[in-house]
Length: 380
Ligand SMILES: *Cc1c(COP(=O)(O)O)cnc(C)c1O
Image (cartoon, rainbow, N blue to C red):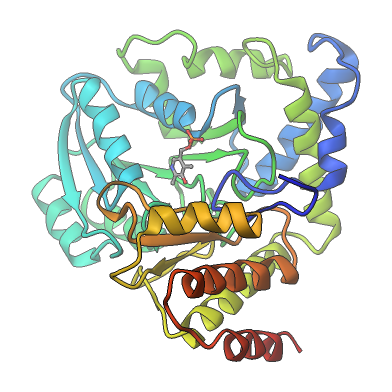
């Protein structure tokens, strides 16, 4: 892989060069006034990113670690919980809750579809005693977007005591998800998605009532016991050794977002990449998989005679671009193109061009020039 390598996936993503430099800086101890100041500033920037006054904790774990932290602090044996399962990551919430002994009410959503709110309403009416509802904002395995505000409104109406926990690992920083305004009880996010950082750091925030549940919850936990984080936070510390480099880099990313127009500008940059990609895909005569696509990625349905696994490797080997394939039932059938991370217009064009050229290499004829021209026209 040369200097021209392009990583255009829905996570991990390309990291801005100035942010990468943060990882080369000399190490400092995490219990020093210097690091304490950095942590304080990073956490205050994180609160703005979550649009919350609640504490936001940084965990030294990938996104799934933050999901597990949400579960062990909010769910105990016997609790009834509702899990929206619309793909690979929805399955993860369900499996985690089951391991803790929860009674899981699963709402299965066909892959590629978004949650049907009238089905949710019916389920809530039958399960007004549910303790937590777990959902994704964006189901990254299918590219589908769920209507989190719609979910919250239904909870308010039908099961107001039920907590709402959102896996926003590819949702946060791609579209509005105001934690306080929408009264979301728990949001988890991860560094290697729209936060434009390397993998390994995740974020979690709890509302006041989720914090209460965390303190009364009887599930056994040690490393992910968020009570330890609440206490450490009072001293502007993390409970365990802080991931110093990641937290320094986080501060740079969030400051740069602020100085380049703030979150709404970031959302529109991502939306523009999505629009451009989808225009190119449709101009090629290909179709998009999810009915209501999320901003973080576009999922392309491959022609039936194409082996998607081979195609994906070919794109990497010949065009030096990593796009992602599908998982489980979608393995070999789709290509996922990311719109998050450090990307510019030429990366977006390159992703569509490489996909089209690879399809041509595999004997599937397409009007590549036409598609690229329509994308370029949109850029003007
Ligand atoms: C990436 C992702 C995860 C898993 O994150 P890891 O960092 O791989 O643990 C969970 N949920 C969603 C929606 C994701 O996109």
